[in-house]
Length: 130
Image (cartoon, rainbow, N blue to C red; front, side, top):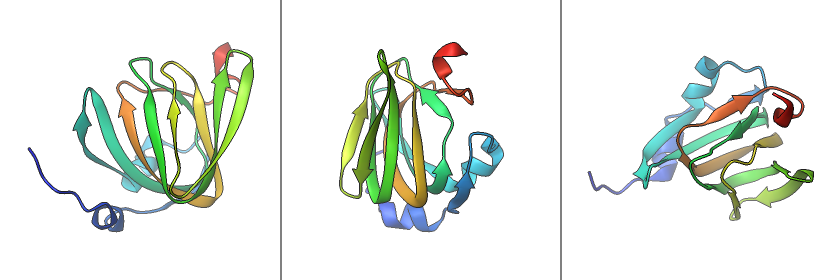
C-alpha cells in the first residue's frame, strides 16, 4: 500500500529505550522501534535508544543506517577487526552485508534503518568467535 509516512508522528508513538545493553530482552526493545514498511526484501525501522546494542548482522544485503537525532558510534567488524564510525544527525552509513555491527549511544540516538531480513544477534565480546 502506498502512503505518506510522517516519521515524527511515528516516533511520538514510541517509547525511548533508555540504558540499552547487550542483555536487554527483545520484549523491552520492541516498544522503542516501529516498522514503517518494506522495500526490496528489507524492513524500514525507526527508533530511539541510549546505551549499547548487541552485535547484529544481515547476510542478505547491506543495511542503511540514517541518524535522525543525536549521535552514535557504529562499530563494524571488518576482516582486520573492529572499526568505529562516528555518525551524527543528518548523516548515514551503509553497513556491508554479512558484517557484524553494533551501536554505542550513551547520550541517545534516533535512527531510521533499512534492514535486510533476517537479522542475527550476538552478545559475545567478539561475535566472530560465536
